[in-house]
Image 1 (cartoon, rainbow, N blue to C red):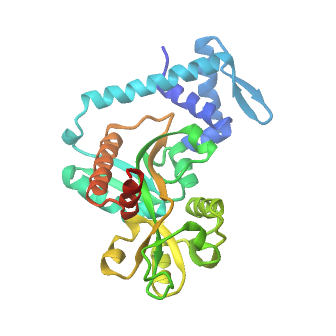
Image 2: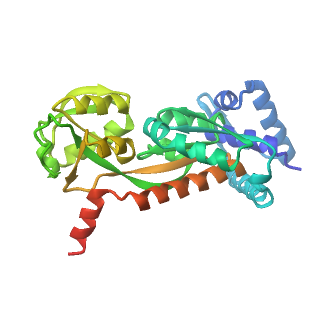
Image 3: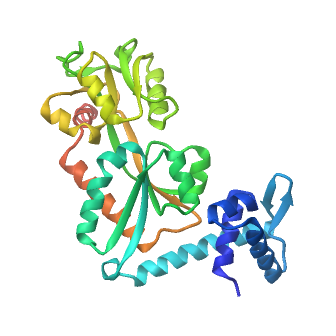
Length: 317
């Protein structure tokens, strides 16, 4: 009989590419992982991995077993969801990770409202970069993650993802900027403008650099911060501009301390829920994802992006 625990270890070794990396993710010793794999191979009468100096690779039999293993765990998760009503749980815990903007501006409201509905459940959250969240999902330190922007090839290969929405990105100026009296700006006009930006190497910075370059705009970097609140304060008090997600600047736009300019290109980034492919979502994680998805769509229905309205009018003429 196949042992689900051994299949779980097998899937981690296949994903990690080595016994030592899988052991680190599973918080086990390498000899223990090796022993479980040997016992699984002996029970099946086949070799599942080719051992090499740089790690292990699946044999043909191993690839077949991995396909079935993934389907088995998906069915296990589906069965749990089918028979378990989250509202009837006496207790439970969900560990969530999110990228900085999502963690600061969206996740607190989601968790508050979720716990009002399910007060017996504990939700813990932490902030990390997209690669950090992917690594913690693989190590099973997180059950669910929320990230903004694209996944790199390695993360996309090992994560399941669901796009919740496309988040509008605003070109923002403060009262001291020469564009303050304007309602719109073409992206090419941002060439040579002073920008307050996220730190180099961050996913949002890489995205913005690519967008500006594609439209012939070479920004002059006036300051770099790893915190969106710092970026907003800098823009409000200077003649520099910034590009930030809509959810991060609602209060400032309502107060009139920042102005969002219409652009000739609709700027958006995908907000994704992510989880590890080898570890299907638990019923609690699935319930939270469904709840977050409803919150996102409700918020977008009530507060459409002004540039999106302008874009929609232009495309219907």
